[in-house]
Length: 441
Ligand code: 4AD
Image 1 (cartoon, rainbow, N blue to C red):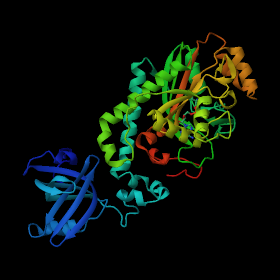
Image 2: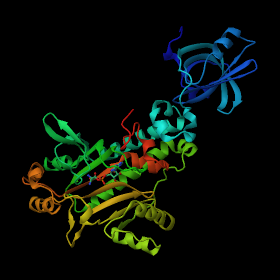
Image 3: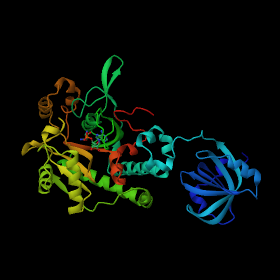
Image 4: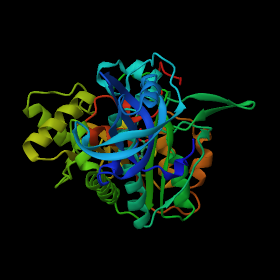
């Protein structure tokens, strides 16, 4: 082609050009319609969509060339901006030159903008096409903003980002849910969480660290909120008085993230998603016991008095939102039975723990606690959980040479964004989700 693609402007910027200005744009063809002697092309790039027009009676050669084109072909168009009333806005492009850059094999297996009518598995099989739909790409633009805000928040509060091993020798979050890997001649696992290493950083004297990294869970869940590979945003902080210090930090980080997403993309989100990320005005704390009472008052009894199941979380989310105006709230003091060995017990009531979950619109998005930092107590807790102390010697060592009181939390990035946008299925928030059935692409 005679022009350089560097001269191209974003399609969104076409709408601020004057009548008669010449522009070069490029992108994917969303649709080609031929009506009599006129061809209408809808062209999309990542910034937006515009209609381009070619009239047979003005340039027959160009008309014939364009009539060969179809959806998802990549083209560049040189043309004149014209004021017009179209469904895409108040400008269109009168095509003067057309450069075919890459043709799409026909038929194209899915129509990206028809995502709503397409089965999620088919969409994921053709993910690169599925992501050509503006709405589907927006999820990742929002994720980028959400995680960037979390990073910014933690950095501005004295945390540094660290990167811990993902090939590990021990499970951290309890027994069976690890993926084994063969590490040369030794058995190993994919990390469920950076838990033990971020605690090591506390022993090393970093005082405040965070990590954004993958976590692997070999859970055969077939739910709309579980992945076997997800992105975990972890923090760990030292010299705390209790888990409340961690909660305050996490609360402010999550609110900051919601606020940034709202400021930057709120108006787009409104166009495409069931919910917009509203900024929570209050973030209550209720104990697990109080949560059970709230549910019981509404006639919902939890099957296990020591736990809060998914349905319980969802119902509690409804109650808290309707009656207290809180989409975001903490449940604290979970039972020792269901919290990992490293969690500090509640001193006055050791059957409970200094732990919390953060629930957002009825789904747990964060889990955290104060950690047990006394080596001898920690060792006993490992035994109490029926784990082999020998396997945790490397971990207990961190606590034997001076360990400050500390605590931390892990946030599921996909769940945060899923709840921000009110999405039913977490798979939509993962570029290429892994679940018990899905390993490709
Ligand atoms: O509750 P989890 O397992 O806690 C931990 O990993 C602790 N090490 C955290 C800590 O510092 N104490 O996971 C934390 C969060 C959950 O609240 C959820 O948002 C997300 O990680 N998560 C998942 N997201 C998607 N798919 C899964 N299978 C998930 N499992 C946990």
